[in-house]
Image (cartoon, rainbow, N blue to C red; front, top):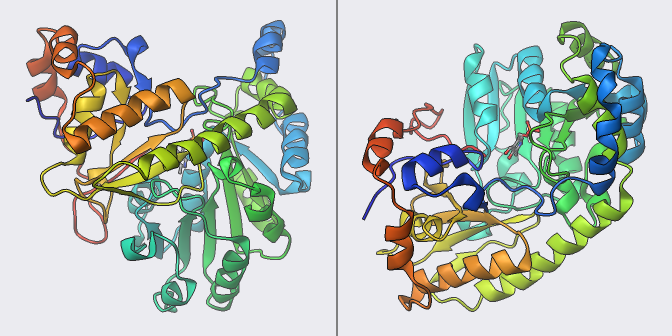
Length: 409
Ligand SMILES: Cc1ncc(COP(=O)(O)O)c(C=O)c1O
């Protein structure tokens, strides 16, 4: 059996094509966590008519876009900063705050650690506990927030655990952080997928806490990762001024800026996305609970983390079987605190989700209902072995815990 030694990003479809000989267009990415409905119809129908806008520079202040985001997030326009995806804002915030000693609540998205390590600071992970279903125990975390810690990173809902920390708990955490002069950065990239997200989002807390920034973007909920549009909400005017001073001008192109003004207004699409994900979240977890030998953690976002409880079956086995059917899941063995028994997948359409559930059932029960062997030989091209050895360089991000792990996407 072919083995892959590295994980694949949700965006690595070309690499998968090369490695497994499956055309990128035939792969369903259950690993990119992107809304399966595709882009907003309102955006699709109107964006082309704005093409001439690229012959001018964007508004340096992005006033129309920021005003639209302020309406969408129910905050003041002066609290909004826009960026080239939330990735630019993660980088910018960390550069500006230049943490000396940061704590990241993990397992989580790897960009925070990468950025902190690029600076002069050190970072450590606070591990969420599997036995708590990866929920956050604020009182326990507080023990690690010593006087020398100056920066804390939380992803809410968290990638890859899909767990949510309620606003009330974040408020308690912010009070502790305030006392100890710790800045809290919350990545809310997946927040709109959560049930009653307006009650969970910490955007309203930016009015009361000046040691808080919330990061969001349109890559996931609005299925627009190629647009590179992200935004931050922060209620600290001095910090906003500093960010604006240090930020490169025009990092959001004119079309992305106009797209943002349009898509946040597509209420029908926003509602339909929520309905689909909420219904698939309930249906798919119901199906998962009937499969023997696995455990899943209650998902709050549009993806779910699953643990394989059988020693002789690994996440790599699951990945290999699924990819040969054109279904790409995320092998989570590269995340800190997880191992090769964890995988993650996002909710897609009911038909596609059923296909994946069938694969998981097959792997766990050993009962094949499909045609895995045929799929295997049909999809392989001659270049497989080369592509494997050429592309597998391993992920060498050196973490504070001393492991060489670095989960991303
Ligand atoms: C938690 C989290 N934050 C940020 C990002 C990057 O988002 P963007 O495309 O807005 O830069 C990702 C992408 O997978 C993510 O999972």
